[in-house]
Amino acid sequence: SSSSSSSSPSPHAGGKSASIPDDAFAGVIEGANVLRFPRDDATLAVVAVLDPLTMEAQKLAPILLLLRDALGADVTVFLSPSLEISEVPLKRFYRAAIGGGGEILFDEKGQRLSPEGGGVSFSSIRSRALLTMNMEAPEGWLIASRRAPHDLDNLMLDDLAQRTQVQYGIDYALIQGQCIDMDEREPPAGLQLELGNVSNPKLQDTLVMYNLGYFQLKANPGLLRLRVAPNRHGKIYRIEGAQTSSSGEEFRLVPVMGFKGTTQMVTVRRRVGMEKEKLLESGSDNKGSDDAKGSRGGGGGILGSLNSLFSDDKSEGKKEKEKQASELQDADDGETVHVFSLASGQLYERFLKIMMQSVVANTKSRVKFWFLSNFLSPQFKAFLPKMAAKFGFDVALVTYQWPTWLHQQTVKQRVIWGYKILFLDVLFPLDLKRIIYIDADQVVRGDVKELWNLDLKGAPYGYTPFCNTNTATNGFRFWDSGYWKNHLRGKPYHISALYVVDLVKFRRMRAGDTLRSVYDNLSADPNSLSNLDQDLPNYTQHTVPIFSLPQEWLWCETWCSMETLKDAKTIDLCNNPLTKKPKLEVAKELLPEWSLYDERQRNVTLELDE
Image 1: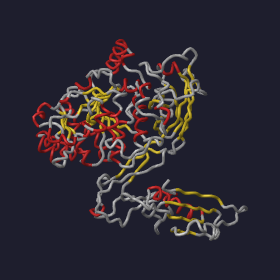
Image 2 (image 1 turned 90 degrees about the vertical axis):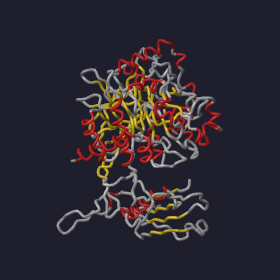
Image 3 (image 1 turned 135 degrees about the vertical axis):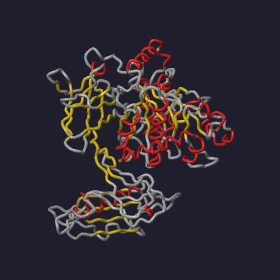
Image 4 (image 1 turned 30 degrees about the horizontal axis):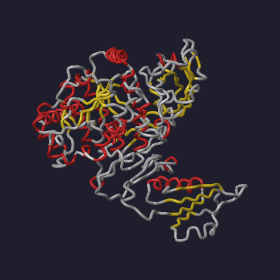
């Protein structure tokens, strides 16, 4: 790797001091840059070899300082930079709050002095670059910003007139783990788990992924109960070593003693007489395919081996299709339409307020919006319930922690794209049967209940193909030639700004497992999946089929002609490579209603903030 570190206790016993002999690395480090932090009385000697221009070195530096200051370690650092670089190796400023934030100081009156313990300070950074603030927290924490006076996605430090404080807090502790079917010696993919307590047996629910048998739940400290959902899943499976309440409920105690989180290894077995019963009713193969077994995150080969991950509707027959359609109709009350979106930064939160207004104004049914809370500002989250009451819609926030075993993205925009597509099966409550995703920077003119009721012809989701009526941008249509043309084999390339997901079908087909497995393989190549949220579903559509929505459901200036704008049911403020106009300018020029929506959201924001 580009950086490495090692530490070892002193070979001396009996509490004697440890130090590194001057000639210990003679001939090995000739010409290297060496940093020495000697301690004559040290009982711990630490040697680190690292490339100083890496993110790993940024993380390791404060740990080495902590070992020196807190444990009195004798520290030696060998700097071994890469001799060949093709781009600027570091693109961030980094600080770490470890070891309690250092010494806590008080003034003469006993008042605690700033900065607060546990905090970090960025000072003397003079930069005209537009910066984004991110927090890297311990794996067991689900955190969010509590106080943020500025747009954390668009920080221009030179423009800040005075010292600014941003405060983060822990929302939940994370319960994560692995679930294994001890009879089959593999994950029971799709098994429904519920987390609750004595008074409420179902606070949350989730699915077991085929990817490593992973599951994730969020919780507050307390003594909680984990159980298999008491439906068909509970009739097939039982948790080994489970306790039984006086009412006959089977559960496993999960103590969460603090905000450190907990990791659980859950083993299950089939009940007597259920050995041959299929967990997923759609005819899917619970054993999965080679793709779901080979990679770090549970993936291996890509599309060729994915066809065995689930069966096509042809094997289900007409009765199965009718059954699924009936279940979808019965599960929903026929009134509420569920819409999912996400945003980050003040500009896109402004777009989001406009999108919500346009959906509610044009949809006859009641609407419930679901937003990913990970990237929303504290001001916007506080404003949402007030806006919901003002305009007559419902709202809920969902959150999920990106699993450590799944290839990590380091650019915030790509992280957001990942959340759009990789966790659709586990992001929402399991009793939610369908969701419509709409990008924040869209204006809706149609009734989205049409999408809600649309027959997807057995596909787990539906996307709109890219327009081809704007011939001026033909040269930018990369999917019409080369690799993508050969891969698509006549299928259309779809845009990801709007899509509808049949969550019942999506979960039964284990489409989430497929998408994560393919993503984990392809994302190892930095040149792959350049438009992650869009390339991934288009790449996998030979295995996870896409129903092509009618063209009028998504209009974009880049690809669609102006003549077709009048028929558009949603308008996406996409970037036009020819004009390169800002989205705000495009919105005001193209959409007469946009300024009205914008003025209304501004007035409502001022009114509700008062």
